[in-house]
Length: 214
Image 1 (cartoon, rainbow, N blue to C red):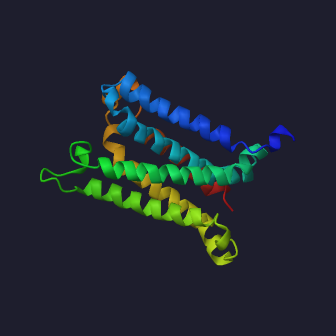
Image 2: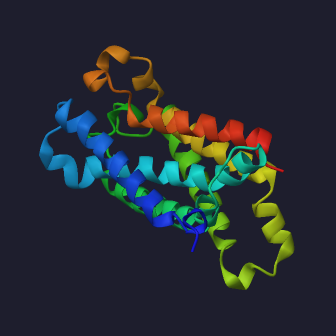
């Protein structure tokens, strides 16, 4: 089999997972003050969220990138389904882990003094929940029993829907981390926050989909 036509999903997923979790460890543990006891949950959650966003953005963007004339390897195009489903599973893990850890002691920037959500916290959670529901719907498009529903498939893979899904993900990141983005002096080791790295991936993916998705 020609290597260029070999499904590259496994390699892409492994590399993105290692890079994402590795970046989280480097920024928060090695260059930052976060104790190593927080690696198995708090920091791993950050790394998995970055990997999820990168995989989903790749899933959304490889086709449009190919349409724009960029030489996307066939193996990468064949990997899109696996990238999307893996990204969705990582989002599910991220959502569950975040739910368990979501309290003022951990995410103080999202709470008022009386431990209720502030406006930024509410907007971030709303965008996150809507993004998850949309991703769940998109994941359903891969299920055999829905493949014959042409109206659903056409809608869920349409240019307008995909751009809307990307915007919701971007808004979740924006509300989640913009305060840290505006304080470069507080970046551990000069490394940008994971939410900013993910937002940069979103911005690139959005532009690719805006101009390349048919």
